[in-house]
Image 1 (tube, one colour):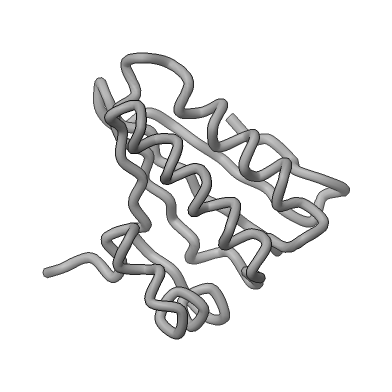
Image 2: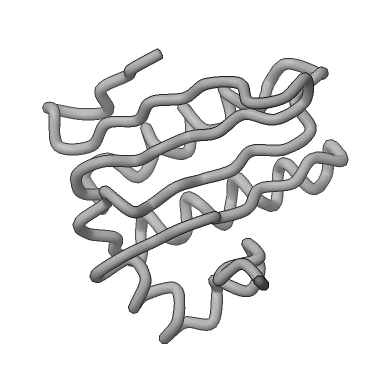
Length: 114
């Protein structure tokens, strides 16, 4: 499923890869303008009781600011209270640097260990 968040700046596609896992790819720019909607959409994807893991692929995400990073952290926190996990499997460019500089990546098991 493809959902456009905001005025077409940020998109996400998702599919179920296992009976309990959802895989989400983010494309575009995640910033203050769409951070709240991003948080809401990711929480929606975690809403079904059978979803225990949400895997995020940020490879096609071109920009990630602190508001969007806070949204990801809020989604992670809410997921943990429900016994779910949120991880980042891949990131490139600016998002990868933001995750590394802030050391937030480790909270999402990023970068994945070989």
